[in-house]
Length: 371
Image (cartoon, rainbow, N blue to C red):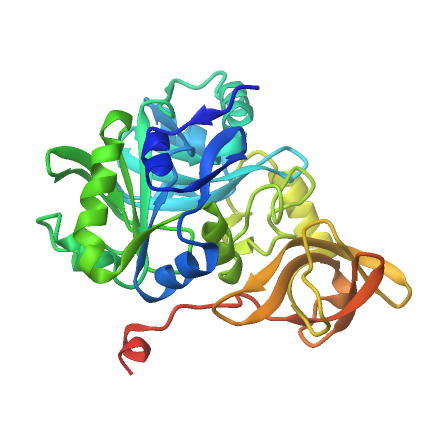
């Protein structure tokens, strides 16, 4: 398989980034170093190339009813220029993907899907769209996406836009914003646990937009950030990663995403299975773990207690902001209470761990940050 490149591939190489293959894409895993990049996002700001993500436009008279059948969340109250997060499920309640839904107009939406799932998702969406009056367009190749994240992200972006960013609420967006002649969709969203923005622009404009943002952020401590820190940042905030906390083996209810599953909404794919699971009660759930013994739990490691396997680690890492080895794990329901002692099998031994509340990190409120 030929690895794909984002419009910023040459920029990353010129910046000295370490490039790896990720989901079929050649992507920067780090620039100056994962720890430094992670701390920059927590204390100042970081700039990410997330142009490998997929974008699908859905338009037409039945676009809204179709999307409401496609996803578990309810878009009926979604206003123009508002965004929403939702899982998208198979009939058995497991997850095809998790995505962002942007309402661009009365009958026009943009779906943002995960990079490694683009072809699979497109096939699924096209299959589900049969019989609806709508048009689907895959914009993934012509649209780039950059993410500006961190406590100083708003100050940096404000130097480049004329509208007051204080009026842009979380999960809302502006269309047609002009940054040095580049038309951008700017949304107050992100995947780091910090305040921040995601900027969508034409693919050919991405290198210029990247440079404009880095120049504007230089005095604020903005640095480019790779996939390594993107993962540790989302992990500390306990945000799910498809293929780990969500998959075609895990339901949104097991992942703890109940608030994004509207069981009172009629007719979405997976409703019957998820309603039955809710009524019966889940038998396992994603929880947080703190390693009390020495070792880092990695995805796929077995969790044990009372002489038996009770689950599997879905993600694990040293958490730079907290300074501890932590993990997310899918555990049997009898072992999910915080304070429960379990073991994680690491390289032939069993390392002690304890169930803890998640998220591991929550960004300080403006008043807390000012202290």
